[in-house]
Each structure stands twice: as C-alpha cells, then as structure tokens.
Image 1 (cartoon, rainbow, N blue to C red):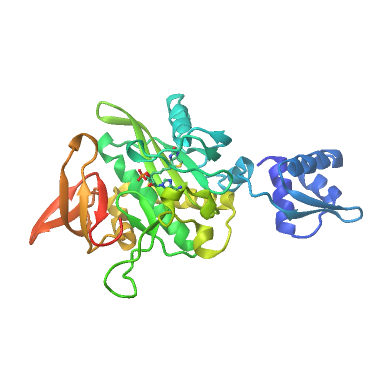
Image 2: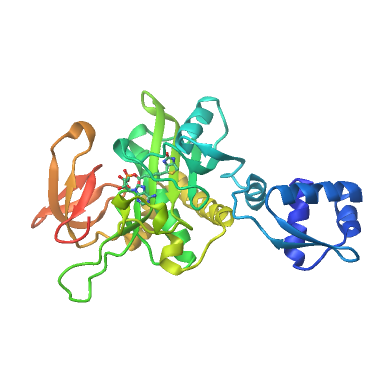
Length: 342
Ligand code: BT5
C-alpha cells in the first residue's frame, strides 16, 4: 500500500483528527511529506479538515472510483492484482481485451467513470452514464475450452446478484446474463411484475483452436443512477440500487466486494466446474417454472424453443421442458417470458 493510501485509511479508521506528527512517524516520512499527500488527496476530491492543534480529519470521500483505494481493499487477492481506473473510455471490455493481448496477468481489472461505446451482446448498447455506476472488466486466463467460456457469465451473474443481495436488494438472474428485480406474481395474480434490469454481463474471449487464451468478463451495474440517467427506451425496464433503495453506495467499496465474491466463485468454478455453483445460480433464477421462449443467437438464426424452464444443466445450459417428458438444452439465446415480462 502506498503512503497516500495508508494515510487515507488511517484517517478513515480514526474518524477523528490525527496529527501530522502521528502520521509522519507511523509511515516513517516527514511532516512535509504528509502534508503533500494530504494536498494530493484533496485534489482527488477528499475533503480534509485541518485543525491547527489537532491535525487532519477526513470529512468526506469523493464519489469517485479510486484505483488506490480499490487496490488497497483487494491487497493479496488474485482478482484485482492490477487495477486500472479510467475517466472516460469507449468500452472497458475493449481495454481489458487489449491488456490480455499485451500479456497482462490474470486478475487485471479495468474500471471507468464513463463509457462512450459500452456494449451488450450482439452489438447492443450498454448505457453508461458518467460517475454513477460500475463499468468493470476483468481479465481471466482459465484453462478451459472456448465452449465453456459462457459459463463464466453465469459465474459472474451469481457473484453480482449475491453481492447486491448482501447490500439489501432481492435481485435475481434471468438466464443467461441479466441481473434483475421484479418478476414476482403481481397483486391481481394474473401476471407478473415487469422485470427491471440492474446489471448486465458480457463475456468475450480470445481463443486458439481448442484452448482459451483469455477471457474478459465485463460487468455493468447500475448503482447510483436515477431516472434521468437512462434513455426513454429504458424507462421502466432499467433500475439502479439507488432507485430501488433510496440509498447511495460507494462504488469503489462495492467493486471490491464484487471482486472478492467473484474470486471465490471463480475458484470454485476452476476446481469443481460450473456444477459447483449451479445450486446457487438456481436459487437466484427468475425463470424457474415459467413458460418461456428462447430465440436463437447469431448464426443459429430463426431457431426458437418454447417450453417451461425447469432449471440449468451442470454446464450452464438452460433446460426447457418442450413437451411432457421432453427436455431441450439451450446453450445460447434471448429469453422472453410468455404472458409476462420480457
Ligand atoms: C448485457 O447485454 O446486458 C451486457 C452488458 C455489459 C456491460 C458491461 S459495462 C463494462 C463492460 N464494458 C462494455 O462495453 N460492456 C461491459 P445484453 O444482454 O445484450 O443487454 C443489452 C440491453 O440491455 C440493451 O439492448 C438495453 O435494452 C438494456 N440496457 C442498456 N443499457 C442498460 C443499462 N445501463 N441498464 C439496464 N439495461 C440496459
């Protein structure tokens, strides 16, 4: 941890003023050096009160992503070994793919305050308002075959949904990669509450013949965005932690909690396969028991499967009962729920 990060944490832990001398001796630096770090922290948006006789007191932290703070929170972890925070970028997934090609280590993470070309699957757009949400891409180098890579979206879905649930909202997963709220039966009992999407995951890979070179797991979470941050097209279909709870979250701390949880899930995936996470995934699935339609993706064209969702296979395929006793495995696609939400 850098001295600057150490000073910040010391002020944060103390909660009251800490003298320049105390900080200087704790970090083995001069009082002038402490003062320089305080100035730099102020420039980074931290509000620090200077009481002549008492020292420095941290009044407030900026609502800004901090690579230093995130690295400090993730010290010693595999995911977060290398943190890059950008102000504006086209897509953190593109940046992480570039890092992958340059040979960056597994666990490298790219975050941005804003994206100008945030993307979803199949060329769709991910709205990426500035300074309020998480746009995070994680570089992984798992020893898996390319066909298994989509399972990492599911692993990330579990990590995202559980992280948000731990913050107090009951979100669930819509296969394969949406984290949503809603979907419960509505008061009249004739339909269900429309789904509101709070997070999405985009996994992209670079592979040689039958081996993955690296995988980038891109995660977008709507944290502190309000209605004005979404386009009219998303009105009623997108939501955020703030919109659901009325509370703001510190995005850096949330990113750290998400990456820690992802690390545990990823390790379970590496050692035992997706099957190890399947029951956690199922417990979060919003589709169980629903009648759904799954449209084919890309080259698979017009293929549409209809049936009742009865779960997920140990490799992450969606299981649809298409006729009594006949189950079809669906590997990819977009799900529409009949007579309910989309
Ligand atoms: C996804 O795609 O849900 C994957 C989103 C991944 C975004 C992250 S952000 C960090 C990293 N860098 C990137 O460039 N991407 C990743 P998909 O299932 O295709 O859903 C896209 C659809 O979600 C859009 O067509 C909209 O309907 C909706 N949508 C777009 N922006 C949204 C937002 N901010 N919140 C909720 N829904 C949104």
